[in-house]
Image (cartoon, rainbow, N blue to C red):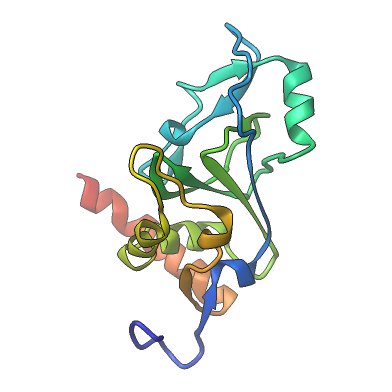
Length: 176
């Protein structure tokens, strides 16, 4: 099903077709500390930005254990998949941190601009799909396998970069 027409040089893809890997954090609550390595949840991804200021903290040992399952890297896209679902942000931080179960880490190949993907995932087209694929009432979850079905209009890489640049230029005018 094609929801709307796209330029000839673009293609329709699913999220599962364009990511190298998708992982989430632990499916349990680790022991938190007063300080240490940040562990983020969906509250740390808002308005398309990563905010570590309200993160909880885990020990270095717990962090190393969690990294065996999932280790966010700069340039990965973080995508909320529990509670509040369907919000994306690019990891533009040099800080080490990890994610809880409600955050998916999308690792991308060099043919995908992470900022374009975050914009696309935050668009009404992709957000609406994320809500359709989210199950549950009290414990809402956008599972990794359902998330992979989200369709995205994908332009060539240079056009992805031009779109990001144009949106970055327009957003400050919209916010003021």
